[in-house]
Image (tube, rainbow, N blue to C red; front, side, top):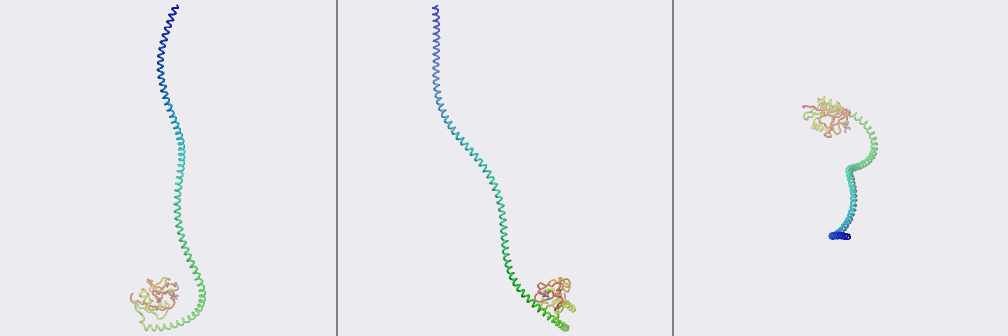
Length: 333
Ligand code: 2F8
Ligand code: CA
């Protein structure tokens, strides 16, 4: 049994040695593997260490770069913020400026309109002022001349007043003298009429003895009386001589009758219709030779008479006065 035990033990030991050898070999292999693996791992570690170093330094520079970028970013942000604020401020200012420019433009346009209105109004006012100035000047000069005229009239008035006083006295004196003269004239007129009647008698006698006292001119015979009668009496005398008072139809006939320089009745009257002068044959007056301002006697002077002082020498006189007269007897039309 011992033996068996020895053998078994040996066996067991052998087995055990075998196992240990195998195990050692195995361990050696494993160890070799581990060593190889360890070597690899070391290399790998070293490699990783390098990489780690690289990575760390890269990380460091990246960190620096990041920090730098952060700073820059922060600066940019700050700047951006400032710029945004500035932009917003400028936007506000721009808006304000646009609004203000709009207001100013509207104000300018309004001012332009007002300006234009004021300009027109100024022009009108200037014209009105100039017109008023002219009128004022006219008025002043008119006033000056009126003042001068008034002063002159005052002087004249004063002179006239003095003169009127003198004239009144003179007139009263003359009136008295005239009254004396009229009564003297009346007696002279009576005396003259008496004498005229006497002369008329003589003339009639003389007329009968002197038929050649008719003058011929352009188709008519003319006769001038040698005494004086009213217009109607004068006309009657002509008619008794188969004639009528002279009718003047032309300048030549007017010159002819004027040349005798006698104040005498002619065949002109407005007895029929006041103001409508006709010749004794009923014809209207076509060419007249009234004196200045004649006829002027209205219904008080209705008979035409010839004065001889100028070409326009006719006068309307009172028919009842006595004058010489001229008869005309037509022998051909
Ligand atoms: O001056 C013209 C004027 O002369 C006289 O009156 C002052 C005549 N009258 C008589 O002869 C009566 C006016 O007939 C004449 O117009
Ligand atoms: Ca008259």
